[in-house]
Length: 252
Ligand code: 9WO
Image 1 (cartoon, rainbow, N blue to C red):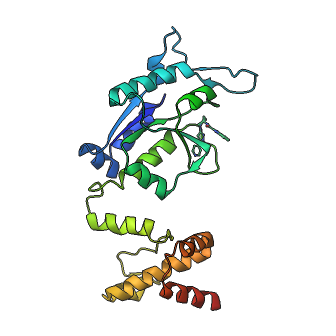
Image 2 (image 1 turned 90 degrees about the vertical axis):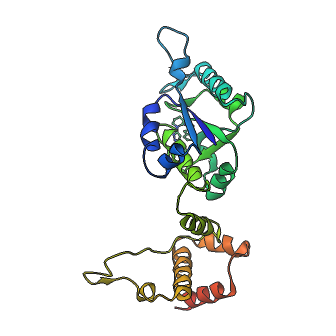
Image 3 (image 1 turned 120 degrees about the vertical axis):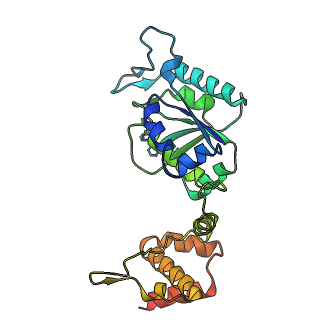
């Protein structure tokens, strides 16, 4: 799988590929990442990648032509001159979810367009962008951080990348099993001042531990994201035991 980033700040990207899970994915060759700097594709003496907006107003707009040349070079280098996804990051896009990450993890990669300044010329978006993705309703100063978030979310889903196959399966199961929030986690020491690890986790009863974790997931999700409980129910992902526990919580 291969990702090509169009960015005027490639130095923001490189450090994230040098540690953790992403490093392992790149070291193993499972994922390739290449940055293409529109500034390297300018043809004027000033190496301009931005200019003032028509119609006036504050800030600058990213020029179409350096971006188009960078995109063409990335496509040529990929060997698929026409048709991989071209993703732009914007609060106007569809929300990045686990389902979107899973869909991309099953594909061949993408070109990630990282906007800067007030935005990129709309004609580049209309000509080339196949998908706009948002991390949420807030404004950043560029698309690089969303691109890294997407890379991380997709890379960790690739088989073998997490190394520990069991933890990967459990994780994707969680992401996929009713879309509930995670249960709390504990490690040593067993007692921290007054605060003890829940006794069931020390009991060695695997079925009871699994049930307790499921109940904690349901409790947290009911408290913080009741919409996710409704979605899980609608998708048929709640068992009779789950419903019984949710009734117990409501009656408390
Ligand atoms: C900014 C913006 C603000 C309100 C409504 C729509 C918007 N689109 C953009 C936009 O595309 N901005 C470009 C990328 C240029 C300026 C920096 N950019 C950006 C992307 N800021 N914030 C994001 C972003 C991307 C994904 N999720 C959250 C924020």
